[in-house]
Length: 241
Image (cartoon, rainbow, N blue to C red; front, side, top):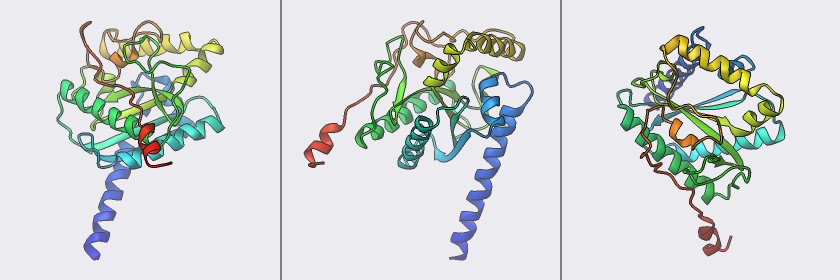
């Protein structure tokens, strides 16, 4: 029993250490994304620590938290909210490896969202080849930004594999308010100052599938997204639910 409590204490301390490391990463003066900085400053960044990006061990817990995050946003659609998922392991993935495991986790979470009755956001496309593609969890569309230690872009180099889920509706709100383009310009300018060049994968929503941007790896025109939104409603029908 003592060993069990000691293990829980170590995990808690390690989790808080990772959360502090991430908030310090975003708070750094050179970090380019002013939207993430705003979410942190407003205490609207929900951070979940999971075990291993290569494993589905925490997926049920993650999808519950992500669906709750989406529902909370529906009730109070305030700007600058982010859901951050940090994995303790591993710390040595190459860019192609990170990309593969990112999509494995995204697929697993999407399947569970469908299985548990999560609605899709009708404002976006589910086909990853579409220029209006977004992921959908809990009825809200999300754009994902991947971070890991071996990312080619400096702004995406965090010490652990991390997935940041940003709400698509927030970008639409910023567009309606006439604030999106200026914010985008500021982020691009800051990213160039940090890395010395413009991220070649960046596109505006509607100019190409945003799936190409998720992992941060520069991919060619022949790249194909390994994701599909699958309908598991038949499982509930067969179970009489």
